[in-house]
Length: 290
Length: 343
View 1: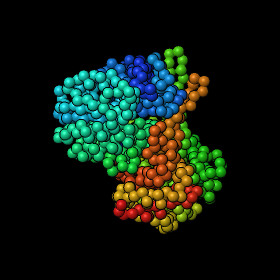
View 2: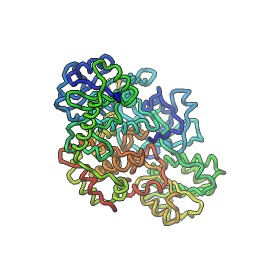
View 3: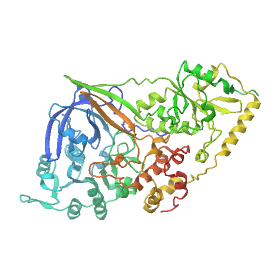
View 4: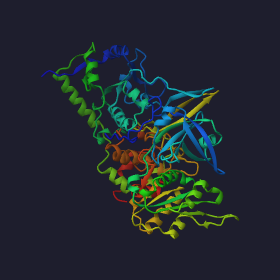
């Protein structure tokens, strides 16, 4: 019988029960786009606040009591421990309820769950971040993590796109990365408006134009499924092997710990075996299941 | 050589259940609700010994109920407070579980023990005694023998009963079973003749399972056929996505989690869910298994390809419920018989 400790020993269980959320308090709300908000939060329990740790790429299950629970990645970096962040697009029951909450409101949190970006593997490599829309949220945790340890990594490219200028998330981060001379940042929108002077075009096309060399590089991709599907072939054309392509997937989830069943891609559970995967791991099933 | 097994007369089963009722909540096969389930024993009725072949609702419901409260919460001036319902679990004894259903619990254990232990499942599982009852009259939909088991397989029960005519032979399988057997006041030592009758009964039952499924390399065949949409569309054609095969399947465990709220107080519940339902994987913007053939493929592959990849065991025990209770006669054995060997 296989019993794997997916928590790597880090278990922050409320009352010893994995399904019980910890109470957390919202400290700040940022409007990213008309439909996306970032929430800063901290645990109500001081001890947990001090002890809690996580890795870039991990996620949590967030509760609005009486409405339900939904999974979101932790979008802040483990190198910045003052508070935790997550970003939410207003699309369903729980996300709508979250959008109604303001500073001081209490939510539930359990986690961190899932695996994380392979930090050791990324060291001494050229990193190409490819993100679309709110797909920047999980990569943002990794990008800040990498930038806070800048000398461990080689060249850094960030290619980020959204449908329109108003759909660009984390504009304050985009500004800092644009100004950072150690980062090559390209921002694109599918379609600009009157005031847009930047690039236009879909993320996979822009990636092909930027054409980062595959030598000693790793591409980390996150965005809507359609963007992910079109990005892998472009990376393939640029010479990236499936092991050099990393993504983080999103699925409908309930339990977050590999039991409730629904988030599988083939035999892998996005919550338990992911959400971070190499393309090599999922290419068998991704063509039809994602 | 004297046998270490015992025997009990069928007429004394009522008394035996009464003895056990002193220590456990005893569940027996019942048709009281109109559907055969494991229900609390009423203290007298043992007529199930005449009609019982298997329950419609598998005994997984005693461990993973269709719906259960996970916790409740309320809000006051200081904020939210969360309270757990008591989880210590009353001691229950399930009398008459069939080998297929007992084997299924061993398969469920793998998921609920894996990494994070599931406290709701395990508190009940660890407080449950399984008294197996070998089949004498399997259904034509049964195919346990194709999965390495048999109608009298005692592997995953505490005590095993085998029908030897007017009596049941009793074998203790686990330590808990040994302790129980030692305390049965009405049991007698089994003789060599009893053992011979049990052996005969086991062979007869084995031979009554006529449905056969060839599981050799089935996981590899399914992997090769994963992208064969024609095959899956043909297999899924008559499925009406009612979910009954999964809800009644003793190895299906998928669940949903939802909140209920009433006047500032609320509770979180979990309830059985089914991969047959489109909403099961529905996300606001998309649904990876919106099409029926993808859902049927997931159900079949989960049992015969993915579970073996993850836990080295096929998540099917051949109980046949998904065949005999399907409203449109969908048949897992036919499905697997015609998996193309190559894509």
